Length: 259
Image (tube, rainbow, N blue to C red; front, side):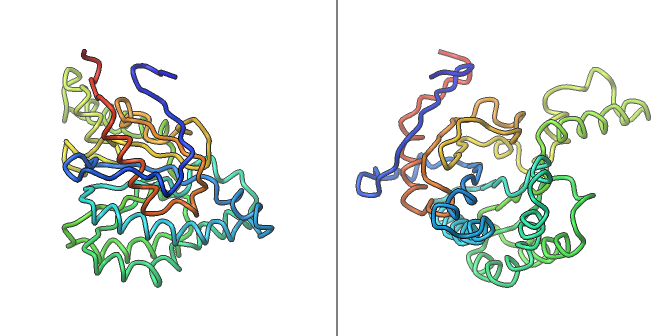
């Protein structure tokens, strides 16, 4: 299946057949839609929230492996603007995870030179959630390795709307000419604008658990990303699964609209 020049391939991963990874071809920026936590728990006759808890362990393992392989940026879809529609107890559990994340996972990530950042609209998030991320960002801000971005209360269309509002305000105040409203100006005002220009857009987008859509995740930045879908539920996505995704990325030919 092809969508606007991008190849969509769906894989059923088997550990024993994982292809070797060529380090020189590791994507600079990988984005992951961490899907399937609830279904993973339901399959094991556990509450959905246990899947989210297991997903945190998977995230640490994948982040450490991405760092080891030389990935520069890892952006994960942690909580979308649409996820507020989920049951209240599940939402509360997810938004409390950053508190546990700081105590249990941040020390290990910090020891591995990983920098933690948060992307998204902070206005609706609980103060305790924000404080956990503020502490994580402060603790790791001097690290020079992998940048781990958490997209929390994130919506891609809202992100673009916010960027345009800022740009229109700059024009209205005379800080920017209307002729300067180009792609680079928009990119700079997105949540990923703090990244170096060559790191803002994911080279590879991974979605777990078998769904074949982006779900309002980084719509501007993923215009030319390679898309990789796997049936593996996120809590079962491990280092070898990441290597398999990167191995498939190595087999792609990226033309960016050319020939």
